[in-house]
Length: 542
Image (cartoon, rainbow, N blue to C red; front, side, top):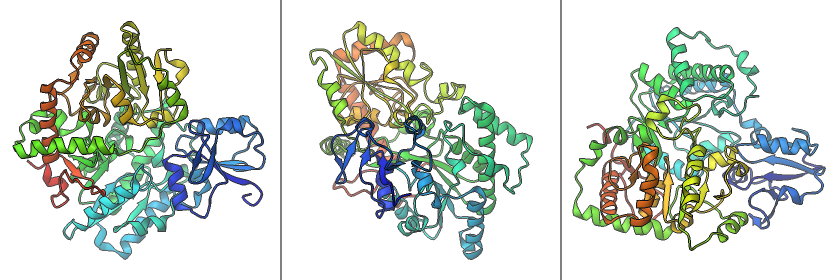
């Protein structure tokens, strides 16, 4: 196959970068990207699908996470899966593991190294993430400083060479089976291998209730299928806990079904657990015993953070940190400006005020379906990002404001929002630096995003629609009802970020860096955040 056809990669993002790093010997002839094309990526041309007139001599490796629409497009061109194209996970499929293989690997490992039973278990996408090397370095340093305790990482390998990954880590790593990466979209996910598994499939009445609760928080449209997937994921992690007997569990994220399952299994087994994510301040990670965003300890109990005492010296350092972040455009994610997005922005009427709406990963935040859980911990006003954007489009049209909308990258990849479905006055950009958009905007609007903090670091007023750690900190324009939105928008446009809001935010930043956020240990001159000399769990023990 590869001897006859030219190998090309569809996608030039993080997944593509990782594939090139994992398999440097498998270089494509060129790249395909429907959003960024006309230039080069790593010395090879980037073409749009429309430029390609003859697909017969190509073998397309789809190097993106959301591949269904691309598959459909290729099939409409007459291409056949596995003959003419494949998703990168299938193309590098020798590295995937089944449920039974994953569990057997853990059992075999513990037979050889019994001292790792009872180790700390870290669940994190440390291999396939936007800055995997930085995350791997952080967890390596964490492992070194465990003071005699041991750590195990479970992660998604998704095509990464297992041995290559293990060489990078200073502690054992186990790849998760494909079912654990199910995202709620692949309704044709092959469950046959799980039907044939020789596992204890007995589920108690109590466990069925838990599965139902999770489905009520996050599910697909095909509820029966989704519940079946959740059941199998539950069985898998139940076995993982039985085999590894972890002393404590660190969970990356908070709102996915895996996070809910790990939280539940940790709780019923009386195992200490906590949640990690990229920190609100660029250059940091966050750890919380309660959850992330609206579920975090300092969102649920804001007084715990607001009562933290900080020195005048610490407050003066905050201004230096803010300047450092803005000058260097620090971010946990790298963005590129596409030509099409640049063109859209160039047509903006600069005489009008500009609103920048920051999209949220609706599914990642448990918005599907709307539930009491979502309403309590994420947003009680809008049922989705799209609903909020439509509401603000009316306000902006009425007041002659420019409205720029950037979907969350996960939402953009999964085509959750379509330009055709948005009003004409909404300027949709998908590939553009967040820093540029913040600087361009007069007001930024968000439900829940790390961009919230960056907005305030830049000194721009923020309309906050959701339940976040910024709630009650008096540094944003908090919204609690639909009726408040337009008056607060007008106020933000008139006043900007006030001096009082700025001072409150600097105090909030200082409190976060003293008590809550961890230095990510990346190579930078200015250091801030908690040191790994202090244990995650001890940091929130009082």
